[in-house]
Image 1 (cartoon, rainbow, N blue to C red):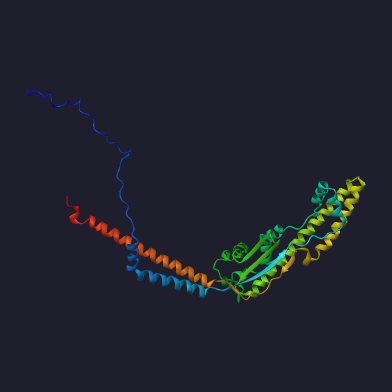
Image 2 (cartoon, rainbow, N blue to C red):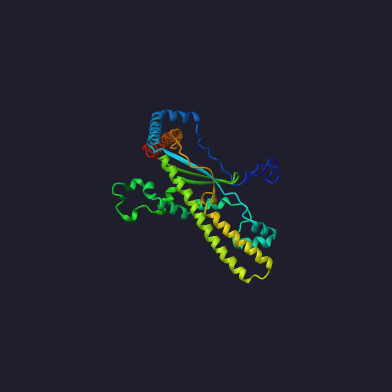
Length: 329
């Protein structure tokens, strides 16, 4: 057995070298992402420029044709405000002097101690009750759905009678052409109605305003009658002479309010700006439709070009992977 030279250092006596730090776990080499070169993208779009031009021209032409063939709509507008609160006598002032107790009695009797609320007018103008009465009283179903109406025979042209338009269809149709905007800052209500005939638009808007006044008058008269009966019942059980005097004064005020409610013109609302015929078309906005159609068609052309390029690249990759040279071991 050969002797081991003493000049050869043992394994334990070898000085350790510099320690190489391990990379953080997990260790992987990130793959390079495919980057889209702007120049290549422009070249690809230029290669299919005629497709983009064709789609853009077709889309813009379709939008322009729609804008020209669409039925023009005219808008009738009106502005109303709640009626000014009038001092109807000394009963309201006397109740107001009682503070919270007077307000409680006034609330029970329906006596208003403050200004009118525009929110109630807005709610009534949008209510199903008002829309139903306006449509039925003025026979607006054939007007709103004239495509399904035969004026000569005065009947619907639908095959199934159950498919004939009804009040719910009318309410849905009115959502797009009848609008009520509550301008809380100015304290007024802005009403608008759109229709292809400006005269008809004004007439229908006037129907809404007239029926609004009738409904408010009916509600007020019912409330006055109920308050009168309530006041008479309270008078029978009242023993304090001061309360009796106030209740008698309130009865007189109810009579005055009933007389005021008979004047529908000034009772329901204040007409700031009456409905007027407009010669300005509000729809269709031909310029806006043309611009949107051109822009949408251009984006569609670019998208189709990118999609076609992607499909062709996928087919090339699949063909290359299935080629005999690639499949050789």
